[in-house]
Length: 144
Image (tube, rainbow, N blue to C red; front, side, top):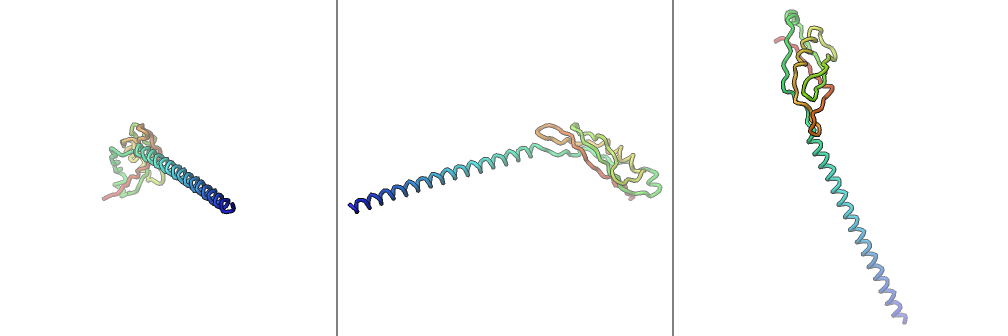
């Protein structure tokens, strides 16, 4: 009777351990599925971000004519730089050019006039042309 009881307890213990192993295996399978789903979601999010980034294109200059060197500055041997800041419109035109920083007064007008003639291929976001503020261009006035 004691042997039968021990055998029964041993069989019950084995069955209990088998159920526990099966539960652990099931939990591992569920964890693996959850990990796969998380990786797939991360990959999908990255792919979407890359696709969105690919649909954003920077503005590109099409024409940028140099300013005229002021004759008075040439006669006096004056050289210098002049930085102009402006916005590029969705049409690729320059809007609201203004001089920033130090610029010799003789170079202001030709720099602003030259910048106003610049043309750009506009910046594209989600297939739409958008304006870009804070674009800067520095004109270098050097006598050669």
